[in-house]
Length: 60
Image 1 (cartoon, one colour):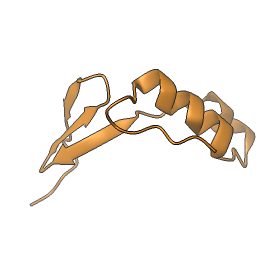
Image 2 (cartoon, helix red, strand yellow):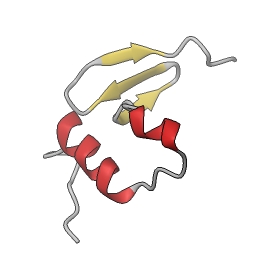
Image 3 (cartoon, one colour):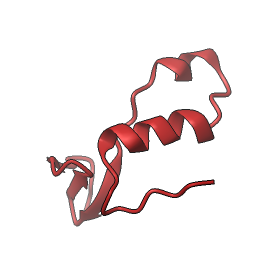
């Protein structure tokens, strides 16, 4: 098994690994395109490609 480190990971490589290693137990899951989160702090999360998102569902 080959592991991808965060320094070489991209959204595409994480998504490809997700498809190979995460079982889809029911048919509706096959259409999902999960966000490949690389990290977060407080209410902010970011992807491997550098895009940042504000999580409005975080409560204090």
